[in-house]
Image (cartoon, rainbow, N blue to C red; front, side, top):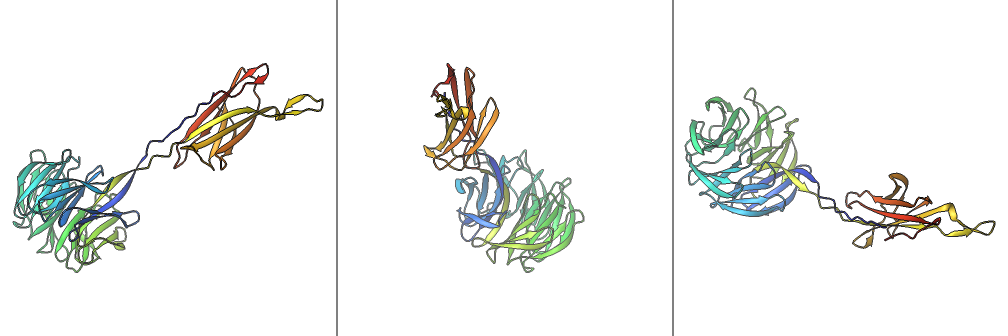
Amino acid sequence: MIVPLASATPAAAQARTLAYVTNAFSGTVSVIDTATNTVTATIPVGSRPEGVAVTPDGTRVYVANSDGTTVSVISTASNAVTATITVGRGPRGVAITPDGTRAYVTNSISGTVSVISTATNTVTATVSVGMAPRGVAVGSSVYVANPGSNTVSVIDIASNTVTATIDVGTFPQGVAVNPDSAYVTNTNDGTVSVIDAAGNGIAATIPVGSSPLGVAAALVGGANVYVTNATSPGTVSVINSASNTVTATIPVGSLPQGVAVIPDASRVYVTNVGSDTVSVIDSAANAVTATVNVGDGPVAVAIGTIPVLEQPRIATTLTLKAEEKKKEKGQDGRGVMAGGGLALKARLTTGGEPVDGKPIEFTTDSVSLCTDTTDSRGHAFCKVPRRYDDEACYTATFAGDATHGPSTATACTRNHHGRPAPAVG
């Protein structure tokens, strides 16, 4: 009998680290592959997109469209907007909880924060905060920078209520968190306020460059904090979070604003609004190692580990025949088996078409007999000694490769009066 088995191997999950950049003046999001620092997609979203955040599982990106009342939800699998959520007026910042269940969006004109359920993409709560809220970050609590009132609102995640209001510097805009602190950029006085997450007090005030805007905190690799200084001109201050001191100042592009750190903290990505580029900083060298052209007016950047589903491997079909080798005349004139055995012939196809150049292993009772490579007709051959069991079975196996799924086939012969029976099937 012949038992062919076609197989389409299930897709394997891999992951890539991608940066999502909002281009405010072109109404798009640029997707940068951080492995190559090239733009792999440009996605149309709403009007004047600013804040951006990636869900922890890497499947969706939330974009605040500041010229209106919407948030665009992008599927990372399709690089397309799959939902548009109505929030408050002038949405500017967006941050997602560590468990991925909620997104917090600051509405600068409404003076509120919209709480979005990521399961349903609907607003489940609206929280009143300070004046003209902009930056937002989520740690053990939600921290909202209110430049209109020079404060930071602290929102309890469980109750979605403001539990503290903290006075900081002048015109606070950006906010980032690590496990111990929240870092707030005070644009008009060139400082960063460090908030103690445990007590909500100001632990330090750090002078940085001129007009600090964006801030990002690395969680590994020394746990530095990176601050964009828009008019220094064009620099990033590196803060040591242990000492709360600036340890380096890195020149970047024109009017840097957004900043994000990749998960291993080896590189930092900075959006330059004035030059329509993203600067890539090597965090070990504190130097720009690449510059990526993006859309018009890149404002913010978020980085996520994005699952990538490989294309399913092509299903293959393998068939096998066990044929008696032709008899030849012996010296005494009687017929004998040439080589005394069988010819095993396998054929590998996909969709009925031959597949060449693939290794086929022939076995019997799990013992390897030989391996042959398929020819242009998809055939592979193996000559084996004849077995005189009541039934002898032979198996051909293609293990599969990166593009083709595995398959196997079996052929059996039965002994009738010392002669092999024709292959069954």
